[in-house]
Every structure is written in C-alpha cells, then in structure tokens.
Length: 153
Image 1: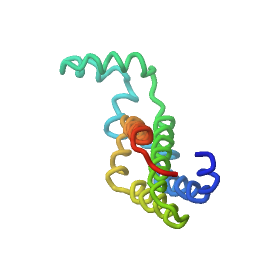
Image 2 (image 1 turned 180 degrees about the vertical axis):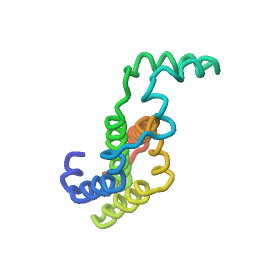
Image 3 (image 1 turned 45 degrees about the horizontal axis):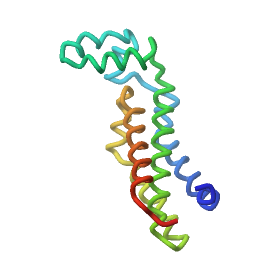
Image 4 (image 1 turned 90 degrees about the vertical axis):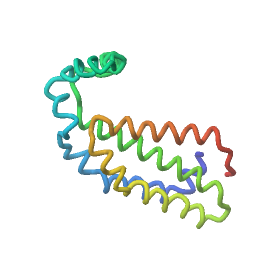
C-alpha cells in the first residue's frame, strides 16, 4: 500500500482535490439543513418521538455517543474524510486488476470522479446528520471488500 501511494501520488492528490472542489461549500459554509434544525436548538427534542416509535435503542445510542451539542463543521469534515478514504481505497482495489500503469491510473481516476461528483451522493451529503454515517458505512464496505475479495497488486 505504501509503494502504491508513492507511485500514484498524483492520482491521490487529484482525487482529494476533486473531493475538495465538490464539497468545499459543505465544509466551509455549512447550512443548517432540515434534519439538523431541531438538533442544533435542542439535541434531545427528537427523543420522545423516537421512543414513541419503539426506537429506544436509537435514543440510547444517541445518549452514549452524541454530546449535548452538534458541531456542523466537524460532521461535514468527517464525512469528507471518510468519503475520500473510501473512494481512494476503491480505486486501489480496482487498479490491482490491471498491469499497465495507464490502466491503473484510469481505474483509479474514472470511478473516483464518477462517484465523487455523483448527484445521489451530493444530495445524500446535504443531510448533515447522516452524511458522516453514510460516508463511514461506505468506508466500512470498502475495508470489508479489501479483506474479502482477493486482487493482485
């Protein structure tokens, strides 16, 4: 992996740059979206509704992991970091199927550009409360594929 990163440093920098250009507005100028309005004003306001729906475990997990405040900047930055890492890991796995350097670069850059600029992910990351969680689940999926699917590199 270390030699791969050294050999494909330009592609990795390009992917991070593309990710930054696509989602910089979310990092530096976050807006309170529909799903965060209540959480910002009162973090526990949704709890009675979740308990009423029988989702008491969600409330319990929220009490354990959610602090009394919500930092929109940290949530958006975490989402971008998880998302970028997942895309680079995906490109690393794809490039392992090709022998020539040009094919490896294309296997990294083309899917990365399509995934990063995909409207469905851009819309998904508009929901601030779940953006980091969705990106983390993508990263977990890529990590599990890394350990499950054999590839040559």
